[in-house]
Image 1 (cartoon, helix red, strand yellow):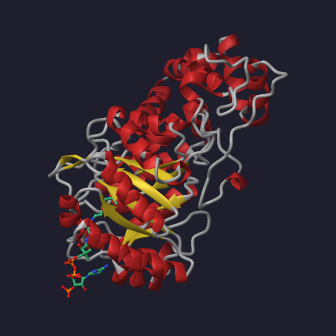
Image 2 (cartoon, rainbow, N blue to C red):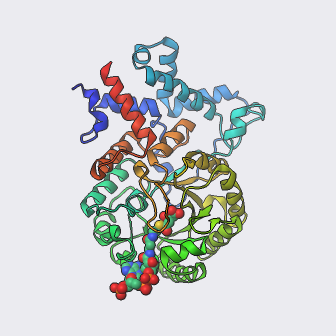
Length: 431
Ligand SMILES: CC(C)(COP(=O)([O-])OP(=O)([O-])OC[C@H]1O[C@@H](n2cnc3c(N)ncnc32)[C@H](O)[C@@H]1OP(=O)([O-])[O-])[C@@H](O)C(=O)NCCC(=O)NCCSC(=O)C[C@@](C)(O)CC(=O)[O-]
């Protein structure tokens, strides 16, 4: 077996050459400096486009500064380097990459007059933040629906791997009733083991004060409350009405404030409900504002059953953004109809800078019939890398984390990126 046949087997660390290939291929080298990442709010303003330079010059300058491999790629392409001709799929995709990276290097928010509206890139990419904070929900949302109990040791190992890939936020577990979600009955053990890990934050779901107190006792330093824009879903998920849930969450956020614990708020069924069907954007906006007003620092808008398309996501965002500042919003898409990445793209275009995702596309809600997995973190990182958006996440390490949990669950990854890159590596090994 050649060294290239192993890397995406990921039991071991891949050889350097393989990591290098994945990085070249995926532009995971487009990572921000660690000090660019402020945990609570990772919004990074766009670099202004110098009026004295052409866009091309800006591209060159920016590339030289931060993304040397792209110049490398350009050299490869122009010189017809053997790396490209031998590894056909890599070469082909590098061209695609180069194109998107070239385009992206026109500074985003503040293009100069030379990068004018005639420029299609400008037109479509101008609102996209330069840095996106990814909130990894795999250990919680990803696993909560698994029928076979995953041991705490596996969950803890997964969290370690996710953190080491550079993810700034890893939702670790839920302090909910074990009768309702048996898979997360080990919340205390998981939290005990991870709460002091450095490099990431570990929010946990708390449906009431009982859950809040248990979370704090286990060492949680961040929590999340989860309301719904659908009455029916609220009832089936947390056994109370929307108003009752908001009443409970006011008590939780008050208690959290006293301990200076940041609270994230979720709005589930932000597009559709398995029982009620389409949910009006005004209802989503109402619940989002209530959560924001009670002190949630960030509101995650969840398409719980994954029915949204850009056509429904944009009006929903518009309604919410009228009442909650857009920089306080996150989007949380399930991929039931394969719409997640396009939904994320329009959300980014609307200026949203935080995206929830789940390793290997794991996920689904036990109380939302038909809900499939979340958008895969690997696919989100791949797309953001292609856009030149920084995430601070190392795609190669992320792939290893995905492979670890998929092997444990005994099923293939739900990430198309993970599948494609494992093929690329396998193909390369035959050359
Ligand atoms: C909210 C409750 C507890 C109400 O459940 P309930 O049955 O109405 O609660 P209760 O107050 O009557 O208590 C019943 C029992 O639960 C216990 N209990 C009560 N609270 C807790 C707690 N915090 N932790 C542990 N135990 C708890 C309580 O002590 C009692 O125990 P018993 O006396 O029978 O032995 C229940 O409905 C529940 O736990 N629901 C959670 C369901 C859940 O986690 N769903 C998945 C979340 S995913 C989601 O919401 C969507 C999201 C966020 O991912 C975004 C998206 O995808 O869109």
